[in-house]
Amino acid sequence: MTASSLTCRECGSTYPLEAHFVCSRCFGPLEVKYEEHPSAGDPDAIKRRIQAGPQNIWRYADFLPVDRVPVLPAGGPGETPGLEGLPAGVTPLVRADNLAKELGLREVWVKNDAANPTHSFKDRVVAVAAARAKELGFTTLACASTGNLANAVAAAGAALGMPVYVFIPADLEEQKILATGIYGATVVTVRGNYDDVNRLCTEIAGERPDWAFVNVNMRPYYAEGSKTLAYEIAEDLGWQMPDRIVAPIASGSLFTKIGKGFQEWQDLGLLDADASLPIMSGAQAAGCNPVAHAFEQGQDVCRPVKPNTIAKSLAIGNPADGPYAIELARKTSGTIDQVTDDEIRAGIALLARTTGIFTETAGGVTTATLKKLADSGRIGADERVVIVITGEGLKTLDAVRGTFECREIDPNFDQFEATAEHRTEVSV
Ligand SMILES: Cc1ncc(COP(=O)(O)O)c(C=O)c1O
Ligand SMILES: [Zn+2]
Image 1 (tube, rainbow, N blue to C red):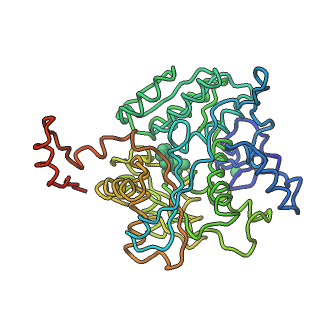
Image 2: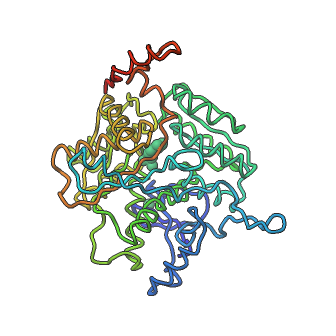
Image 3: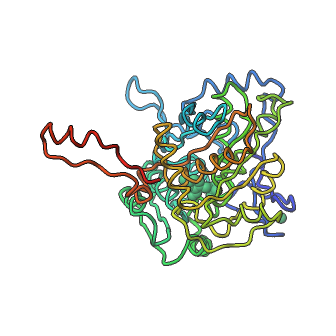
C-alpha cells in the first residue's frame, strides 16, 4: 500500500506527500491515502510478508507512509542490519484475568505500550514522523508536547543524530522533563498550557522551514504510527479483532487511528470481513473532558476547556481530532467516559495490583474507565476487551505518593515480627 497523497478529511482535496497538515481550501486536517496493496486479493501472502518482518513497527511498513523502510546497512562481519532510529512497537499483549475477575468481566487484555523505548506509545508515532522527516530533507526535529512526546522526540533525535527542540507546558511532571533533557534536546518550557504551546509551535513551524514538528507540519505521518497498535493487537489475537478497545483520548489521534488500522486490515481481507469493528470506548479525565462532554451532550464538535487534572499527558483542551473520535465512538456503538482524579489514582493502583503493570496517569484514566463501564453493566457478558496502556508509571510518581505506607524498623527480628502483624494500608 504505497502512500499516494495527503487528502483533506473534510473536502477531499488532495496534496502531495510533503509537510502539509491543513487544507488550504477549507482548513480541514489532512490524512494519508494509499494505493491498493500490491498483494490485494491474497491476504495470506500479506500475512506471510508481515510475519517475516522485523520485531518492531516496521513489520507493517507496507501500511506506513515512508518510501524506504529505515534499515541501516549491515555493520561489521556477522552483524545483521540494524534499525535507523529506535525500535518502537511489538509490545506485550497480556491477558489480565485477575483484573477481569475483580471487575466481573469475562476476558480482559492489556496492551502494554509502556514497553516502548521511551516508555510510551509516542515512540510509534515519532518513528514514522522522523523517518518521513528525514526523507523530506528536514534537519531538525521538534514537537509541542504534554510530556511523553517530548521524551520520544528527544530520544529519536539522539538516535538519528538530529538536533531536537521540544516545547512543553512549564508545569509538567519533573520526571518527564528530566527524561527529555538528558538526551541532549533543547527543552523550552512555556508559561501556558498545551494549547498555548501548540499555537506557538504552529507559528514557529511557519518561520523555520527546515524544522519538522512531528505533530504539527508532520502530523499526517505521525498519526499513521498509531495504526500499528491495532495491527499488533489483531496479529496477537490470531488475526482477529477484540470486541472492544478502551483507549485514552487527548487530541483524539490515537483513538481514531486504532479504528483506521482495523478498518484497513478488514478491507484487505486480513481480518474477518463479517466481523464488526471493535466497540471503541474512549477515556478522558474529568478535568480535561472536551470530547467526553461533547459525546455525552450528543454534539459533533468539542467546546475547548482549560485543563485541570493530574492526567497531564491527556491535558489537551482543544483536541484537533475530537470530532473524529466522537464519530468513531458513535459508529461502533461505543462510549466516551470521563473519570475524576481520585478515580485515576485508584485506576493506577487497580491495574498495578491485579496485573503487575504500573502505568502513568493516562493509563489510570483508561483503567478507571474500564471499571466504570464494568460497574455500570455496559460491557457484555461475552466480550473480549483490550485496554490500551499508553505510558509508564515511573513518569508520574506524584500521582501515587501517599497511597501506602512503608514499615520502617531497626534491623532486628523482634521489630520485624511486631510490624509483620500490620497490613500496609492502601488509601485508594
Ligand atoms: C500516555 C499518553 N496516552 C495517550 C495520549 C493521547 O494521545 P492523542 O493525542 O493521540 O489522543 C497521550 C498524548 O500525549 C499520552 O501521552
Ligand atoms: Zn479541505
